[in-house]
Image (cartoon, rainbow, N blue to C red; front, side, top):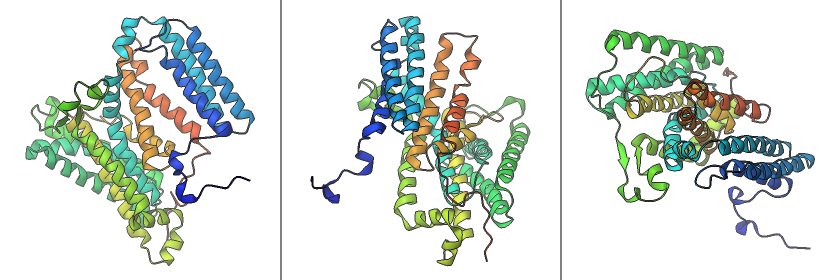
Length: 405
């Protein structure tokens, strides 16, 4: 009988490779992605045999995993195989010139990070709210408020730093309204969040027209600067991807790490999670359920507003009505897809960000289909959420108002 390795010498859970049928399913997913990648630059295989053969191997691995009880990862491999084969065939039918124009990996990576950053801020904010037990459908409206008040604050104070501060205050106030109705008045949290969305849409639209009129936001509003890393510029892939990113992108990385530490490594995070799982037990132990929930919702508003401010004074450098365009809802989908954990939500945000970055380049193939390509992030959001329904386990008390006994 083989002796089991001591616990101290075992690899951490996140370093352990999947084994058995689960490992075969994961291999199938990787092969499905490989089937598509082989037809893209720099390899750019010109024969359909290669993606079809690799895709069939991916589907076989997925079917094998399904027959062994690993249905989720197995079906994931089958879907990846189908996408890989279809994408590979389309890529081989395209000219190499078009492929090299669209698929520039360094530029795609940078565009992915730019598109994922507002989703990351909002998803991290949603995590704090929902881990404390309050659903925050109002992330969309809070992001919109952050976008408007961020650029308005930067314009009035001539400082992008103060613009961010004003955006954070506005986001916190909108979240506070949602918290009051959801926690103290015990209103339906979905209805309250939806009301916040309409309230933000109305207020920002009215103020935008009242202050800026038809001329729109003026030019010369202070912008959040880019961080230039000159020593990376000549490095293949890394240079185009990371040498010149907006400061807010780097701040989102810092918030990601900080959110993980706070939520899972500190007493405050334990209180937030306990209130979201079993508020009555937390109350019995002397934890203020109302106070923790208010804190979680306000933090969610501040973070979501940062995502909105990045859009207006860090990315687009102007404001238009309803400019968030559903990003708050996509961030909620990223949170669900990421199992209410920061790194999972970030990975989902990157996935949605990549689809947005790719959609911006795909019109190179067809100008008439440009509008259709722009729906890719939303279609992917629907597929992702549909794939995790019934499998994601949210905090036990989320969405349930608590009445102190």
